[in-house]
Length: 250
Image 1 (cartoon, helix red, strand yellow):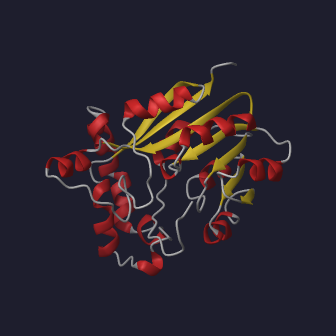
Image 2 (cartoon, helix red, strand yellow):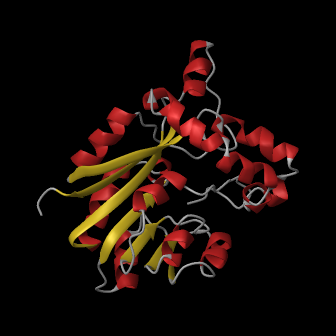
């Protein structure tokens, strides 16, 4: 998932995805490009068996302490992944903020549908390039890649709500549920990281921010207000778009 070991990556908990997941349990889950399993560890804690696919050795070492099983492989090498998984099939396949890193995301999405059980579903989370901060910068004539966020250095593809839906539907899925993560304050994460002392050495580990008192206070107080405000215009105020789809042919 990472371009190099020096990439300044930040992995937040995808609260919108967990909200969509709700309390589902006793399911076989495949987390494609799981990273450090920062989000899927919460799904595992509900009583689900989570298998992750990840190419970064650093991320694999952490993820193995959080979920049931990890396949250390490039998620784009489908034959190698399928061989490692043998004949296993999954109730839910998750692509959480990974497809935007790929040159041909729709092909990868289609390829993994072979691993879905009958009646299973796919959850896709994508950053929203229509976010207010990106729009303002474009109006000012600026398009600059950043350390983290919608314009992350390793993003190869960019999606609005409409183009995200179109890609998912063209892959052969029917969208049955959707939600989002608000983005009113998310563009300020790099600044917050600096204020909390997160430098290059700790940028891969989000704990300095996620376990901080300011972040926990944000989740209790500002986040609910931010979600309510973003619901008025998610096309410009949502940071991440989260969709759940089922195969059209089932």
